[in-house]
Figure (tube, rainbow, N blue to C red):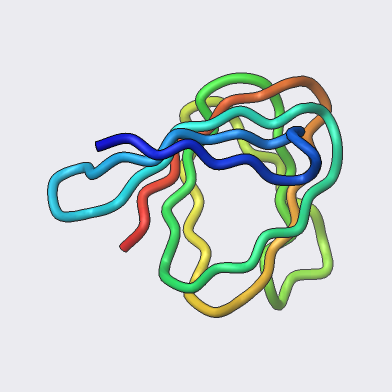
Length: 93
């Protein structure tokens, strides 16, 4: 069914669900900077707001547009900067 998650003192919240054979979360992030670790491949799409991402192996921030998807490999860490409260969808492969 559905499972709620909360991170970074409540500044990031998500609702997990099954999307066919994949697990997915839809969530919100308050303005701030957050580092996440992955344990599987993640396909993240910005739904609303603003986001910049620093992916592993990169030394530059990448600006993500609304409805743009980026992929993060398994077993790495990545950082996002959120300028205004934002929403996202993440599919776990």
